Amino acid sequence: MKAVCRFSCVAALVFLILVPAVASAKDFFVKQPPASLDKLYPPLSKEPKWIQQMHKMSGSFGGVFVNMKEGDWENAEKLAGQFVEAYKETSKMVPEWEEYFDLDAARKFAETVKTRDGTEIGKAAGPVGKTCGKCHGDNEVSVWAKYHWPSFHEVKVIDPHDDKEVEFDEYMKSISGAFKGVTVNFKEGQNDRAGKAARVFKAKYTELKSTCSKCHTNGDVKRFYVGESVSAALSGLVDELRKEKPDPGKVWQNVGIIGREGCKHCHLVHRSASFIKERWEEK
Amino acid sequence: MLGLALIYLLINKKYEWIPKPLVERARQPDLLENPAAKRCGECHETIFKAWQQSRHARAWVSETYIKDSENRSKEKCLPCHIPREVRAGRKPEPRLKLREEGIYCVPCHVARGKINGPYALYSPPHPTDKSDGHRKSVFCVPCHEKTYKEWRATGHDDTCQKCHMPRAAGRLVQNPILKYFHAPKDVADRRFPHGEIGPREIALRVDFTPGRVRVVLLNDRVPHFIPTADNGDPRLYLTVLQFDGAGERLDKTREILAPQQETALPYKKEVAFQYPLEKGARRLSVLVEYKPAWSQEKTEVLRESYDINF
Image 1: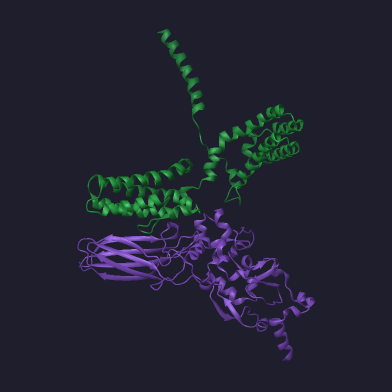
Image 2: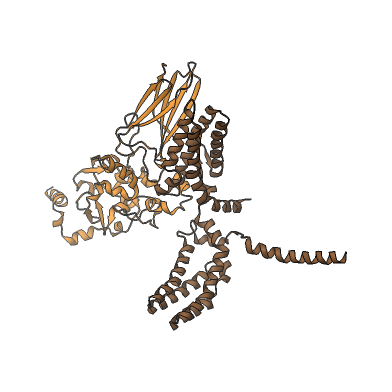
């Protein structure tokens, strides 16, 4: 009995130690960035100042090594100085993130560049690079999700069926419903119903081109989601289902094209960020 | 009388003879420092009032724009909704001042320290420069590139200005004294009229075959797509209704013809829609409506009914 108790205690201890360790190694939490970052992105800021600042730091830091390789020490030193300034400036921009920055390490890096000793410069760059990596590891995904991806939950769509303005999420559900109306009815041999659902689905799907235009000004981007092949498949699906005896091969072929070259393209690009935002916006 | 005639002649024919110091005394320098449209309107009253009615004047304050740009936060919209300087061949920079004026006098007419326009003339309050570009379609390209390309593809001669800034005899200024010193001129309409869309612009043909109907639309007169827009979302709606002998509706289909959906009507190219006729269908009704980008209101373009005799 004593032995069992001892084993249980040891097992519990091992469990308590190991499980959190496993969780911290594998799990990834996407926390919302601090609200103070809002002022560095539109609409509160006229420009995306934070990402511009990142480019400023990255450009000068990386530029040091470009110049080093070329033996252009004058410019390497100049950029190292610019990097320290930008790094210092950045450390003050988001108070909650000030501790990520190691100003001494940055200064030491710039001083070491003056020695023109590649090995020493590499060593001095390490601690600075680590501070960047730590902050990026903790926050990059959330910053991109919050500020660089539009919020689909704010996008409104005019439903071509009844001209009512609906929330994007609701609209996607209605498209999905129309799509199922096609596939389910066709499987059941209810071709008339499948045909009507296909017409509704085509109109709703095509409407997304207008929705894409709210952000994408480039026609090629829109066509990536609703391009010629998808448009042809939508028309092909509607036409086939209007026939007295639709060819199942053609129906499913068109369904496949729409799914692969339309729905999937958009979902692969947009859904991950959208899921993250959706969770943040949950009340 | 002779003196007045001499002044008239000088201003309209030989303004380069007017002594420079005299010219400088008449200048009002603030006119070249990006004044508000109202300031220009002190002399150019007719133009100012026409502009006030235009969509250009509403570019920054339009409710549709504010909503679609998520409270003006979309950067892509700024260059054309608040351009600093409109010049053929380059995308404008957005400006920081007088944003509520939208697209107003300064971006199109102030350049190189002078007021630019299609006329070579002497204007006491500000220096002027004749610009050939103001009457060419290419001037509109920075913000209406897509429409320009559509127009170019038609090979049509009429410029954007010919239809959307029609000229009529009038005076450039309404200032009670100054207006008589300039000869009357053709003045362009700054309401930038949008043009009618009616049965004359869109030809409709309906062909019946057993069990099917083909509805054909043709943009017969407007040398670009209808509707057209680079980023706005104007639409035509084609609704086809089928009724039985008792007037009961059997079917309703609707098509959206919109530039953002790449379904707008091209110039002189038929666009056909085919539908199966429902069993028992005896009458077919076709309705085309138009909704501009800035409104949810639809207006009727054409409506026709047909008996089905199959």
